[in-house]
Image (tube, rainbow, N blue to C red; front, top):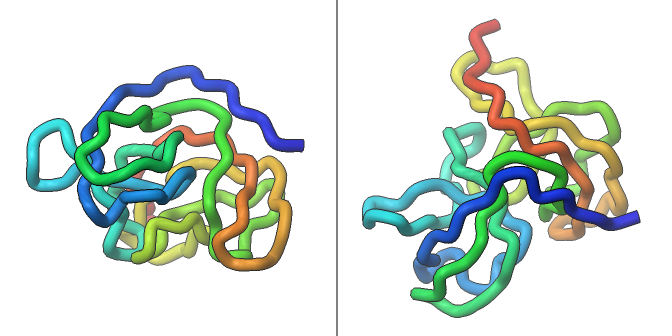
Length: 128
């Protein structure tokens, strides 16, 4: 079952790296009100891009709520997730300093780039 329950979202401009990347994880770029795909595993993210369009478009980014997310094939229900260096969701590690982004509800396929359903609740940096 695929569904979204947008609780909190905001419009941001999209840079070239995010073009056509619906349901990928994004972060703030160096340009005001602009997002880009995450580029380091476990880094702080802004949310999940809800639309796929060309560079410069103003698109919705889910900041909090239930959403689909493109993942690397490792997500299973109940696991927390983090971002990959390619903007995909991946199972959270126990490494200190990674940012957990939420919890997986439904995992879908084990094929990289397919969608899982997650609860996005940017819950902070791992300290254990």
